[in-house]
Amino acid sequence: MGAAIGAAFGGDGNVSRGDILNVVKENKELCAGAGVGGIVAMSLLAWRQNEALDSTKNNSGLFQWSSLFYRKGGAITNFINGLPYVMNLAPQATVFLSIWLREKTGKDWAAFTTFAIGFGAVPLADLIIGEDSYNPTPDEETALRENKWFSFHLCAYVWAYISSLGAISYYIGKESGYIGGGPDKLSNLALAGIATSMGISSGFGIGCIHELIHRPTFVELYHARAVLLFSNYNYFWVEHLWGHHKRVATDEDPASSALNEPLWTFILKCWYQSALSAVRLEKKFLKNRGQGFFNLNNRILYPYLWSFAIDYAIYHLCGPKALTFQIVQSIITAFLTDNANYIEHYGLRRKRLSDAKDEWGLYNNYERPGWMHAWNTGDRISNWMLFKIERHPDHHVNAGRPYQILRTYKESPTYPTGYAGMFVLSWFPPLFYAVMNPLVEKAHRDYEQQLKDGTYEKIFPQGSNNISSVFKVVGEDFFEKGSDAADSQYDKIKGKTSVWN
Image (cartoon, rainbow, N blue to C red):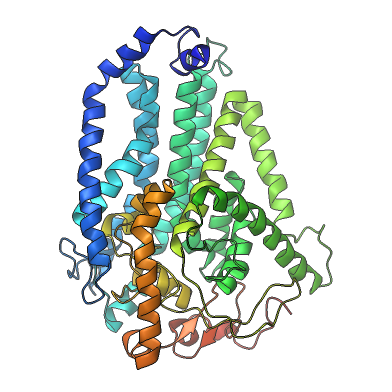
């Protein structure tokens, strides 16, 4: 054990009790600061939980009703409206910050800086700054939809991610001596920190990838698929579009967690069942086109061959430690993606209408996905970083709405804080249940009352379009006239053959 700890601290494998005490002493201010920060965060969280239990008003926020970043105007206004989403690059910037701090301080644990910022500073900022409660007007929506800066920020993330992955792989090759033939200056602890930081950065990027796979153009879809190639996660988009969006908030959906289901068992189940579902869906897609599974048109199998080629190229050009970095960041990306799935529908369930099953023996006759089947938060900071994926009920009702015009309603099931903070909570199941279970019970009571007194149809906008992508045909699966997708960009593909026929 001592040798393992010694190696972790970058030494020669020998560590004494005095060494450990010295590390604690050197970082006592940091530990004290973390303790105070934790107390402040828990106090703020308790306050925000009480707000989330009140459906009569939105959670608090600084400038929460400001229309800034939503206003209709010219070129400068359009640029300003899109500017906050440059924050999606902040997690990647912290990876380079962590590398710089490690070199400047000589402390290998500084390589974990992204973890401290992403799951310490960001949740605290969300709790302090709070919610953006503003929903754009119809005129503002039109201007925002036509603003190309919002698509620019999505695609910019993709190129920044791929460039960062290549640059850091090269850095690891140099530090480990694989490139240039120098001494290995990269300890296992430093490697773990850099790989973890990159994985967290990529995990935060899921808001971008999620948005791109729902867009109606192949250019945007293939930007998303490029990231999935480099993160070894190629099946995600197939299962998300035609599995998750159809089965959401049911026991048949691997990505919808049940009440009192811990994250740590959910993740493994979700990985296995989501991959299985994606393969089934792709087999059906190919079979209906007269093609076998082992086909160049397979959107899962052959992309994985490209991913393995990328992994091998990293190994060949930058060495085994760079390959370790690549595998670790890929695993953390997948983990955080399904960590998001875990919290997004926790405990929420749609009513099953009959015992009808699909060809795989899964129940498939449920009420339409609605505004009460996903968790919502308008927290400003994490929504800017995650392309408003946190306004999740509107997304599942109207998957064709671009992120910049997603709406938030206080009557939807509401988190006490943003995704970053909810991630941290979910790592500690008893604490997560203590915060979330009362909110789950409230959500079920509210929905029952809304249906009983007829207020559901008055509170939330009409129309729905549950599945949206470049492959989607209007009317496929859950669709109701009145959704924005019915009247705009999807009119051109009405009447075409369904993706499954």
